Length: 481
Image (cartoon, rainbow, N blue to C red):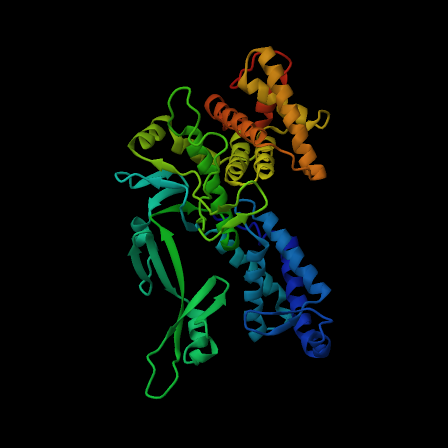
């Protein structure tokens, strides 16, 4: 969504952009005048997009930090990173440095802020490998709003460029994508300078493509390609973010989706969820490599160990029909498009941490992520009550109507919260597998109860106030206005 005049209309943003330009020009001049100090390592240096050396003076460092902080804060409707702001600023500086001077700082500020607003109007779509959710043979897509699970072959018409090479195989699809900048830089160079036939670029490791050698000549480089492997299924995510924040935000949205899929995954009455409460869930986008192995000696027996696949979810007709019946897409959309200070916003903050907990391998990490999720959902602005007491009492109200059962659960949660505090404040990792599993069980029951009982578009303040009232023994009326 475009944000008209948000940046251009802000005086602080304009002044910060002007100061950045002036500090950058000063840094360029300092690079020439203090070259010996720079070569001795006494003055840090950066290189602009055009390769020009610029002294990273304290003034320039402060100007960068200030400009990025102001713009990120102003772009409230678009998730942005400091890197996005500075990349745009340096690109604009490179352009202005070739044709203008310090006297054009006002023009530079307008140009930069307009570009950032244009960038903020973009609607990126991000594709990632999917190692956690697979589709049965007769299911081609799981649409949960901004996040979709797709068969990788089905996205090819949307993503494929004319110069990409696509190679389907038994594991999925391999993409070979030419890297234009590196190809242009290395074309015609001798391959002898690169014995491994590979080079490192910001996007990853690139394979060099060689020309056919002429008679009696060494091989020359024709170009460089980035090779990507996608499994049979992938994530397709609509992301409300600038370029530098897209991947991180897309993964968070996927983690929210993973928790929703698990919480509402069909199960028999009385059965525990798939995998129980101790199985580690596959990371949604990272493949477990078989070479991550270990061997233990000095115990009762030698125990070699290799990596193994974690918990995966298979979406067949029954699961898809169940998700459609309960309106899971609408729930997911309400969370991803949540208004500020609503229950839906808190759910979006907490469900992602719940997934992180299931994906963690160590007991202490799982336990810590689970309690982060609990605090994200239930912590309030009440400074007069300890947070452990608040979340314990409120969770007990959501899960039970009987005062005795509430008291027992609140006591159990406060004991577990004490372990969490010991872990956070003293680093003690004495969390048992049973305690981590029990916390996960309580959290999943709690989140499901909120999703099923509460109007999630309600203001969190009202939701929290009703929980506080009921925590003294009154009935909880989740939708009372």
